[in-house]
Length: 312
Length: 312
Image 1 (cartoon, rainbow over the protein chains, first blue to last red):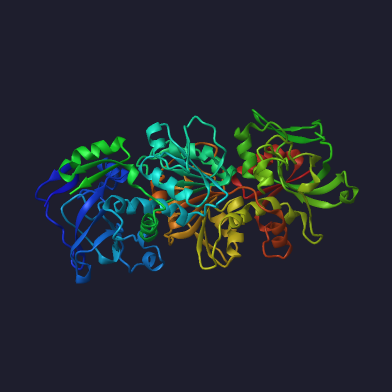
Image 2: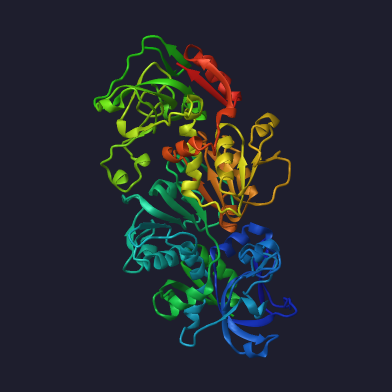
C-alpha cells in the first residue's frame, strides 16, 4: 500500500509499504488526514520515529474483531496504552510508559492507504459532521486539554501566543468559557482567521497582564515571552514541544509565583460534541487540501500554512 | 546604630548607619535574626539591594502609631504593599508591583539595632514560643506556601530535593499532610536533621516517581533533576530563586503534562500556629548563633550551614 514514512533524509512516499497488522485491532481506511506541527518535528528527528507519519484523521473501519464496527465512520485517540500498569490503573493511560502512539512513537501512522488501531480508541463520528471538521478532532481535543488541566474563569483574561494551527483551536475553546481572549501573532493573515469573539493583537501591542497565557508559538522564545505576559500567580500553558533545550530564567516564576503547565493530548468526546453542536467550526482553518501522492510537497507547504489536509 | 549593609564588595558592618524612619510605621528592636539563602544571593548582586540586609527576625515594638503595640513581642511579614493598586485589590498584596520588601528590595532590613515596618505586617508571638522558634516564622511560612498553591493529597508521595534551610522546613510541613515524604540530599549531616517521619535518600538511590517534587537545592541543575523525579501530570514546586538563567528542556513538561509552580512568601498565621502547637519544631535546625558584630563572618558561615542566627 502507499505510505508516507519518516527517513533520515526527510519524508518519503512509498508505494509498497506493508500494512503492520496487529491482532485484535481494527483496520481503518483513512478518508481525510491532517498535518500537525508534531509531524514536522518528527521529520527533524524528534523521538526518532522511523515509521509511517500522521495521527490526525477521519476514516472508515474496514475490518474489526467486533463486526458491528465495520463500515462505521470514526476518529480515534492516538495513544495506545497497556491498560495494566500502575500509570494506566491510576487513570492516566495517555501517560502509560509502555504506550505506542499513532504515527509518533512505535506505531505506524495514518498517511497511508490503511492503518491499525485498537477498537477502544475509536469514536463514531456524528452523521452530520463532515470529514473536513471531524479531521480536527485530535487537535481540538488537544486544545480542550488546556481546560482539562487548568480552570479558566469566565472573568479571566487569556492570551494565546501564536495563532497557527493549535493556537487557533485553543483561542476558540478558551473563548467558549466567556473569558476575554486575545490572540497574539505577527502574521495578519493568521490573526484574521481568529473568530469574532477573540481580540487580535500584534506582539508589539500592549496587553494587560493575563491570568493565563497559552504558548502556541512552537518556538524556543515563546516561554520567556509568555512569562512576560502573565500576571503574578497566573498560569502559562505550554502546548508546543520544543525539541531543543532552551535558556530560561526561572527566577520570575518563583518571585511572581507563576505556574507553568505542560499540556498534550486531550479528550475526544467533548471535541466531537463541540463540533457537532456548532460551537466550534474548525473548517475555516483549512488552507490546503492535497492528495496523499503529493504528501512530501504537502509537508513542506505545512511549514508556513495553517492547516494542510491530505486525501488518501 | 549598627547595621549590616550589602556593598559591591560584600557585606559590611556599619557602626553609624542612620535608622530610616517611616511615618506611620512601627520602630522595632530585633532580638534574634536568621540568615537566609536570599541574603547570600543579594550579596551576589540579586536585585541590586544596597541597604541593610536581613528579613528573618523576632523582636519587640519600641515605638508605634498605635501605642497598644509598644512592648509587644512580634514577627512580621516582609512585603509592604501599596494596598491600593489592582494587584492588591485582587487579593495578591505580596505581588504588589509597588511593594517594598524588608531587607530585599527598597527597604532596610533587620540585621541592625532597629528597623521599621508597618503595623499591618506584624503578628504577636504567643508567650510560650521562644525567640529561637519564632525567628523561623518567615521561612516556615514560605514552606507552607507550597501547600497554599498546590494540594498535596494524604495518599501522595512528595520528594524534597535539597535538605538545607528551606528543604528542612518544607519536608516538615509536607509530612503533616500524611503524604509519604522523601528528603533527597548528598550530605548525610543534613539528611540526619530530617524528622523521623521523613525518609532519607541519597541522589543515587532509586525513588518512585513522585506526585510532587519540591526543588530546594538552590542550584541551576535542580529543575532538571526535579523534572526527572516527578510522575506524569505531577507538580514540581520551585522554591529557590536561581539568579542565573538555566538551560532547560521543556519538552518533558509538555509530553508528561508536568506543572512547574513557583512559590515564594507564605502565610505567617499558620506558621505561628504550627510552632505554637508543637507540630513543627524548627529549633534543631539552628547550627550557629553569633552576635551581630560578627555578622560578616556569620554570612560566610551560612553558605555551608543549615541555620545561622544573629543576636543583635
